[in-house]
Structure formats: structure tokens, C-alpha cells
Image 1 (cartoon, rainbow, N blue to C red):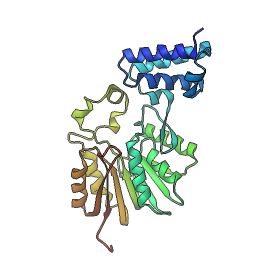
Image 2 (image 1 turned 60 degrees about the horizontal axis):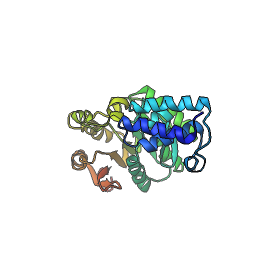
Image 3 (image 1 turned 30 degrees about the horizontal axis):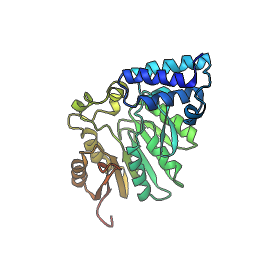
Image 4 (image 1 turned 180 degrees about the vertical axis):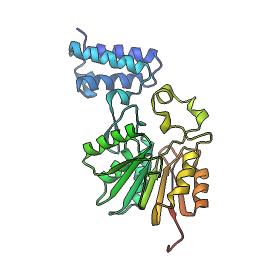
Length: 281
């Protein structure tokens, strides 16, 4: 019978041999997931025996992680904004960088507003905003119906009421909004080939590819967003770290003002937002 520590050491060794960047952490997290333990167990109770079923389940997850399947797809969850979201291969895994976008919207939003989340994916942006706001209503749209199924489940799990619409950007959207937010596909097509295997081979390319220059969806969203914003409405984007000036220029040309670029915790450009229309309109 194998012990908890021995299982971890075998898992770590397997992942390390396959070039998994955070082999130690992932081996521990997968073991905790299977055994329903925490990080202290390895230190304080490492000699506890693993049940045969637990060992089999753990070894299977290690085999899958060794193939560079993302950890979050194996456990089916990812933390974001202090909440736990369900994820699978139909949605991008929520990143900490995207929390910068949510936090910036929260600094600029008011109770009672109406929000549209374009390219919603798992729904993590909209659900977080609704969860931490009062009397705010929202719609999340995505071209992928499987992604929307994930978003709907997350909304139910969080006790959040939102409307989810299958739509190619604004194609099936009606009405106007106080805030439009989007974390659209923004990676240049050629760059996708250089990404780590976990991303390029397993996360949905539909949610990654931003066209030859990465700006395809920004152009479309900026152009059409003005038809769906209330007076003094605001548009928020997550961007790639080298896209700030280009997205700002698109927004300025479309009639946005008070355009700002917000940096992430690493000091890189991460968010662009602006207000549509002239003062007093």
C-alpha cells in the first residue's frame, strides 16, 4: 500500500520528466483534489495510506496532466475574484490578470446599471460583477453554446441571475447598456503556435485567435458598441500587454473620450476603457 507522501513524490517525478512547469505544485494539488485534503496533509500526515481507489484516480490524473492537459480542466474548477468557477475545455481558464478588468469596472460602476459581457466564456466577469453589486442586471453573450452552458451553471452555483445569449458579438443583442465589457480573443494567429502546450493544444482556439494582428475583435466591438450604449456609457476591454495604444486609437476614432490604459500587477498594460460621447450628451 502506497503512502500519501509516496504518491505525491511519484506524481511529482512523472510530471517533472514531462516538462510540466509547476510539477511540484500540480502533483500536490491533484492529490489534494482526489483525497479532499489540504496543503498541510503532506507535511503533517504524509505517512497515511492511500486507498486503492484514490491511488488509481490520482495516477490517472497524473497521466493526463503529463500530457499537458491543464490542471483546471482535470479538477473542473478555477478560483477567480474569491469565487470558484466551473471550467472545461469549452472555455478559457479564468486568469488573475482578468481580475484587474473586474476591479476597474467595479471602481466605475453604480448600483442599478445594466451590463453586457461580450465573449463571456465561463461567465466569470459578469457573474463576479453581479455577485459584488446591488441591483445590477446583466447579459452575457458568446458565439459558443457549450461555453454558455458553463456560464449558466456557474451563475446557478453562485446564486446570480443573468441572461445568457448565443450571439456573434452583438448579432442577437437588443437594447442598450450602461457598461459593455469584453475580454475578446486577442492573440495574434502566429503567436498561438508559440504558446505553452496547455494553451495552444487544449484551450479553445475560438477564444484565443484575434486574427493576424490580434485586433480583429476590438475593431468589431468598438465599431458596433456605440449603438448599444446609453448616454455616457462605458466600454471596458482586457487587452494584450502590447495592444494598449492600438485599442485606445480605435476607441478615440469611434468617439470615445476619457480613455485610460490600466496596468496589471506586473506593470503591463492590461485594461483599456473609455466613455462614449461628448460631455453633457
